[in-house]
Length: 633
Image (cartoon, rainbow, N blue to C red; front, side):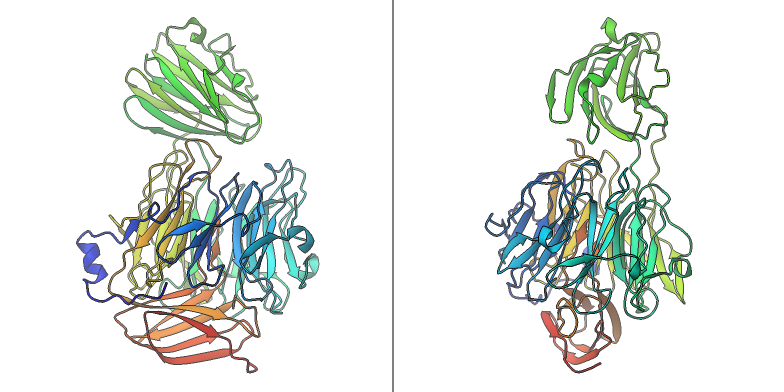
């Protein structure tokens, strides 16, 4: 699809003030239909037709490659184009690993909660056919609990290397690993690189960004379990990785679930947004008769509920990621086992009456460390009691409906959590300082981009509780790193599932950044499975320019480059850092919103090998490919 120049209409700021939405959902119209567990999404023009295509991992199923037809619609690629099996697919990332001009893809795979094996997939793109070559390339790494792959050229030899981030296993096998691209194969590196990747670390994702005032970019490695887990920042300008965290971070930060970088305050230095989220027990009252709960148990405390009603109950238990059966439901003082009336994969459904003698009397839980759910009715207090025990980490999700009103609802052994707030770190001198953000609900994931084309980077946050989705948030930037929350923006999302990731691309080539959202976070169950959603940016009057880099002396993607654009007297910075964050990859075209500017005065490129390139007096509202000049730096 060719770029469209938008003429006429009110300025976006006026549209937002009048309550007009910035986004509209186009999922169905685009031909995307999926409801289930998510995990990751990655945008890239994989077939070089000028339109961004979309990869989704479909956690526990067969991945999908959605081909962009160029008219706003997508079509799932055929088995001929994508040769992949059903597997525990996690995050994926596109890159031209062999510098042949088309995008290849790496998808990492889990290992059955660290107790089994599952090979990663490295798809080589051969004229539009994706073939898994991970075993012969040496990156299948089957014992790894793969979380996220990250492409980088750490030795600047023009070939993209691969960092695989793995969650730790109980047997300490297959930790995170750095693989050097040798051409035909990848070689797992060792201590010679200086990159410390402890076997016991829960490394879950990493990003590239320039934090010290010069290229190459720094590597920032993040983890989620156990909290607190501070990010680790590595400088590799010397060819060896050296940790520089202490000189840059104001303090340690834990519970980090995602991170995005960008120049949020306009000082031409990248800043950081750290998203904080924690899997923890939660309890939600849906109405006078219904409740929903998610109970996490790490083997140290009993979790439970106290439900003040004398009604009969309909109970749905969902047992994701725990190896036990529904005979773990124990009723009353005698701990009578009750079989479910029906089951579906990980779900069991029960009907329970307060008049049933089997449910009467409190059980003796004792040490209560085996995996079990105990349920009983206290006739004197007219209260149903539920307790969840486990000798190891486990998660129980449940829904309860009472035929009589629930007078009161209490959590036992936990307190419903207050939302963890994200941290905005703005560059200041040689380090970073914390800057304020609006008070926000619990939001595990973020994406950034100039969504209103006014010349600064905005934020989109995917928000949820452990067992109930929350409206996603749009924060518009005033150009100085101060953000305001916008209501009625049109991409609030769905109440179904649990919000997980967002990935950004201009899928219809109209110069306005669109959003793809996954609603399938956490252990898969009917409560956490949700739909994919595509939101089209309705745009405004702001002009734009999108840039596709083509390296010659460096890697073909130009990964590691920086671009500075001056238009209307304002200079902006963008980085080609692969556009990956936790479980999501934005399209690698660099998007600049230009506001009222009708020409680009100057465009400066700094390539990873230190060479510089300058273009002047450029037109706007178009996609521009810039090929690296071949002169020596």
